[in-house]
Image 1 (spheres, one colour):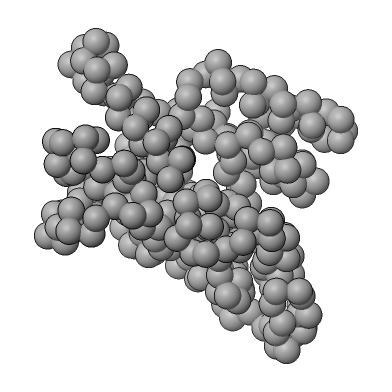
Image 2 (image 1 turned 90 degrees about the vertical axis):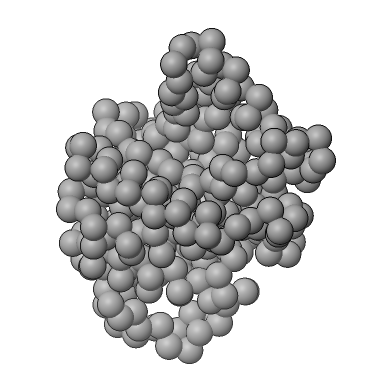
Length: 282
């Protein structure tokens, strides 16, 4: 088993009456609730924490992409990974990840991930999430009916850009490029390991199994619900005659720290109920 310190980088200093006055921390949260001076301190505190995790022996440092919210202050996780690449030495940089259907053209992801892999000495783990509806549909205006089709095409372009030996043209439905000639190339060959975060979509099960990618289940609802999702994934793997390698599955486990179990429950449970249940119904 390997352990990644996964950081959402939330904005923790919302007003005490936030839940009474506002319906969500996502998409339409008032901008005047954000103080850039506080944000400056938070970004640097959070980077310090991730650097400390590297020093303490964690196998990976996790960052991810979200937009227009107080829940995760990383519209560009690649910026955070770039900062960590020069300030850490051992842990993998687990970027979970870039929502590749949002990039136009998605070759940008191939380029930036290649840069991170080379700068870090081959420590990048490339994450390709489809993305939440709040990010992809509400914030970035993507059409729900075509988001996966765009995702699959972007994936194919990125992989070919990483692995092709010669310049090629790409004539997709959503992206058309006369010249694809990736500079720099990633250090890890044929390409960095790919992890696909998901919340239980069966399409993501199939995609991971078909491409031999790791399925990273983002479990925020406890191990009982998590086991049902994991069982479903392993069933798909078995039906496709794939090796049931334990490293084919990642599991996100939230850890709450407080003086007592009772205090942790008091502090943690309402917070998660508000952030995950109410935010998902914007």
